[in-house]
Image (cartoon, rainbow, N blue to C red):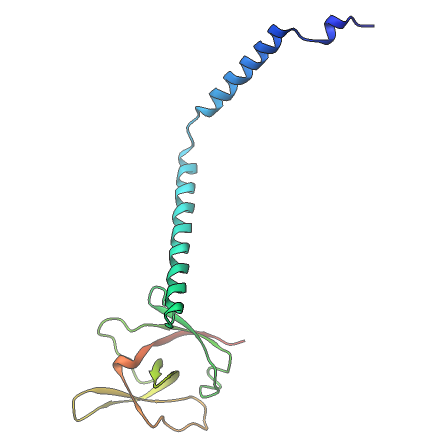
Length: 167
């Protein structure tokens, strides 16, 4: 059987153990973070800031009734069969805003404002009016469609389709 003195540590031993523990924790706190860790944390902070800014921008644009624009690109969903079979109903399209001085060409699929609607049709002809203003004749790809009865002016064009995905 052991004596009771062997089972317990003295007050001095407890204080020494506590002092060693405090010293070792202070040594580990003094280590500098690695360069990669600093770079990684900075990258994550910047990524979160960009995502929050983008979400705020999208939210504010939608709140004001506009279409969100991210780096000059907008996303739309086709809601009618006027562009079928090229763009079936429910297709998602990515539209790039026209850059300075750029104009659509015959054959481009453009998205534009017409009265209260947003329309996506193909440019079939470029028409220069007597007033010198360039306008665009458009038509849906559906074989049953006839050319649109209106001409589209450049300032009504939201952009040119660059990508589409159909379910």
